Length: 379
Image (tube, rainbow, N blue to C red):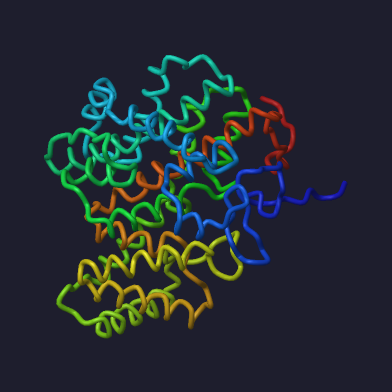
């Protein structure tokens, strides 16, 4: 009997169609519903991109106004969800808070047992609107700070920063945050999206699929990489008094030593991209603006030194997490909150996929090749 060909990690296996996104190999561009993500990041709000992912087209003025009003009406943190969050110890990872909050929101949703397209769209918008309050409050409670109520006169990104820090952010910071949310929103059949599509394929509910996706995203091989980037920066040592060149020299030496020790360095390489992550130039431009805004050239030195050393030694390019981590750090987010920010963004792409799964559903149930003991009997 011929030996089964095993595709570990489903590498190279095409399991279904999707109209949500693709990587165009000719231009090395990530496309959302056909639009290059760098164009969306330059010209659109995150609200517009969310509408696009869910509906297939960018909104007109009337559609955007209605959608924006709907999102702003759902921003407040449910008091019961707040109670549950408060019951979770601050020693737990913030991703545990996101996972639990999503589950509670699902159990409390008025359409919890309705899986129609209309109900799932309502659930998706509600999650999109409410998750920023969960993430922002979790950071504040860990700092011993009180909840900041949302504002309905601010856009999604500006309000998110308001709830996190209790003060209005300048336009440059809001723009950089908006760019990061758009770039993280969707990426085809990645691990968390596929995990959620498997759950959805059983005809489970949308919140269960989102909860499972959050669990997958928690892993450092998927969503935790932006946190790991800052841990690397911390290990090298962030010295604000240092020049760009001095920081770059130290970072390059650190990377060379790490590679000699065969240490896994997060933030580099991507299974999908063969010529570098297409999202990096846009996120790096946002990082550059934040470095200039906050006057922190030493962070650019660390960034450049690590990138140069990895390129020279391995020819491996950075992925989106590499510039996103220090960008969030400069904005004032705690490192543990970086992956929850990813959650708040990716809810849009996840739920677009989950609704697409139901539109043409087939239970996802692959086979396995057994390599255990042959049949035997209890003595």
